[in-house]
Length: 227
Ligand code: SF4
Image (cartoon, rainbow, N blue to C red; front, side, top):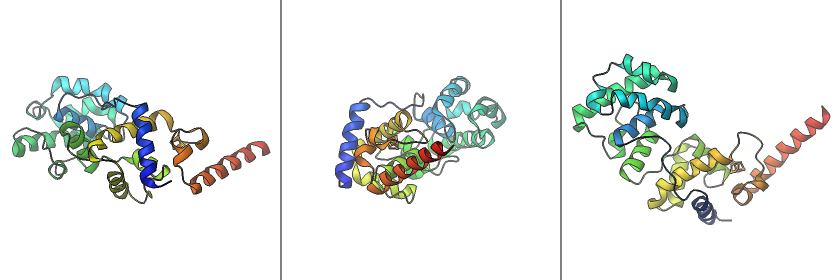
């Protein structure tokens, strides 16, 4: 199956499964989304959603955030992990938003990426979900799935992003990004993928991958029998 046909079939299935994909991080505006995405680095969305109500109750604008010290921010966000770096980034980016951007979150990727703690993926999430800009955020989960589905060769996150952008229409990037995340969370176990039973890999997996999975499974079964 050609890559483009595969992408079309995958998109149709994702639309059926997730017709209304919502951003899983609770937020009310671009600034609170930016902070939530920053906090989600190496942390689950559920944990971030448990922590942000307390943070936003103290400060939900850059003006209020700079009144808190990094230590005060850190005490609130500690459950999200990496709290020394994240609290410093939140304080400093809030200061820079006030100093350089009139207290507003910039809309374009390049400017967003100049803010502390904001890498390309975080900037893409904000540009896409807060401002509807054409961006396709690719995290490690999407990167891995795109390779498993044969939509990219998996050589780098950058390559995956450009391959996915070429396969899906720009006006659908925001939805497809969320739909792949939801599919991965719901369907993809870390181990023991049964390609035949998977609604996507049953047709999308390459022959080489199918062979590899069969070998892995039969190897495991044989070692179980030997025990
Ligand atoms: S087999 Fe299914 S569960 Fe496993 S990676 Fe493919 S899509 Fe995900």
